[in-house]
Image (cartoon, rainbow, N blue to C red; front, side, top):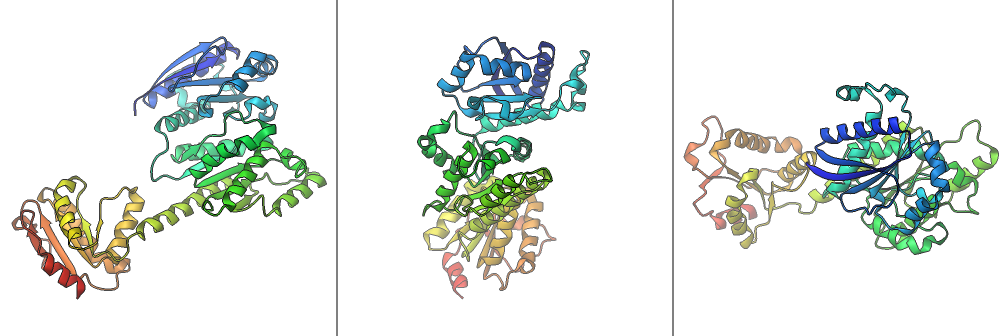
Length: 448
């Protein structure tokens, strides 16, 4: 994938370290086939276009600038940009230290620049350094944005991190990025004290979502239920969305950091109270585990959704009359046969469907166990493919088929006379592609 993007980086961070970051960003971009034009800017007098991204590297020094600079605050609060176009990188800064108006954008945590202080670093060896992990995450994130939502891939709504949940937030972001799930962004600059006006915007995202992940930190829960943090409000909107009559298929995970020996009694009581709030946890699984276990829970939930989706797909047409098997490059030649069958009231399931490899294997096995008959359209140029498909038909009883096929047909592009001698085709009806199928005979066999 060759992409062209422009990346702006606001000056103010340590100059030497910022240049190292830019060098790494350029290096990782090039390795991922991205033409990335990186520009350093002194102020935010910039208009973000479709291919533009704005990166803020925030350490303790630049954080004080963000807090004190009114123009910076105005940029975030008064201009509407896609949340995905602005990326925050935190270096030695806690998420809760950010001004409120900056807490609604994607952020990545940079643990340390210490390892990059060597001015003679060789970019050819950059993979040995930890910073490559963060920059690679950012590049994967940008590629995901450019590709947009992909069909037949589950979509996850990653809700904003909440105080002490930033580590879990970043781990989940990384895992989903590298597994190429669809991810939806947060709302851009919602007004905390007037979230009702944003409810419809949140619901628009939820309608596109298969799984939402909510991060509810201890700081939010210590004031629960008297005060609602932004994360709690988003959770309540999602819970209410799931209770509506037509929109109850959304799966949810609510993450709360585990209590520990230093947790005070009030916090423990508040967490217990939240756990018993049926309304807030509607259609949700509450998780309190270490981050690696939490990651496994999310992946298992997505795995279960994959299985459920596959079952729905393969059950759309059960007990088809004919399962029509043909190579990917033979669609034109097979259209005539499919139309002929359908025109005579014979239902057809096609072998070429828009599934990934695992889904396609399950679909193929399902059809061979439920259809009444099969037609294999072959091309003598690929006899290995034909041999595999004939072998699959023999395996059908082992996959759960209970009865013999009522009809088995071979139809070849280059004629039946050139079939491999080693293949047993004695139980098949044979047709050349130029011949008309005997529809009445097929219908009779299917009805027997």
